[in-house]
Length: 138
Image (cartoon, rainbow, N blue to C red):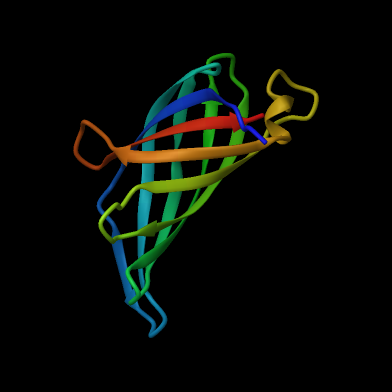
């Protein structure tokens, strides 16, 4: 079996410094506010301020990330995105995620509501920025 991937969008997400909830005994929680950004590709627009990444680092060197935020397309439609993944802070700390979308089922972006998506997260070129490239598997 062969999987193909189509690049859907690249997001440039601007964050603020983390709010440190700290350890509850099971992990160290940081909440990272999402304050804006842009995205382009098959869909273009802006990242809406108000989301956050809930990042819990475990003692075994693996962190769970869960971000929820809104996108606003150039034509004014809102798309909700939840992006979840695990980070292994070992030798290769590549961050891979599984984004899920919620778009108006009768709108231009209803096709985002189905399918399997993967994301690759990298540090951005600006301070407190991350870049996420999202692919749809086929």
